[in-house]
View 1: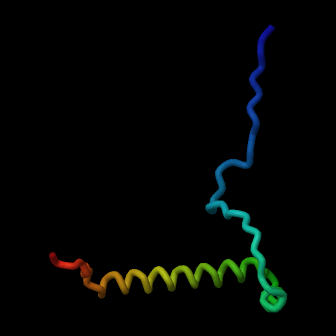
View 2: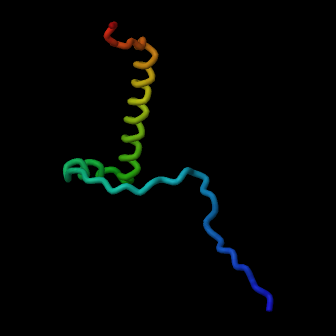
Length: 75
């Protein structure tokens, strides 16, 4: 008897990076505002991404302008 090896075909490698599923608890008021957009989860992702980029730029600017100083007691 010959054994047949069956390979399972999947969807393959995606063109875009995969997203991670997250459960998030937010207030009804915030959700109601986002649900006014046709793709409200996409809008949430857009706002969060913009916030993260802004914060990372701020951190990078702070790191460039701040000179490292150690406050060590001299003995």
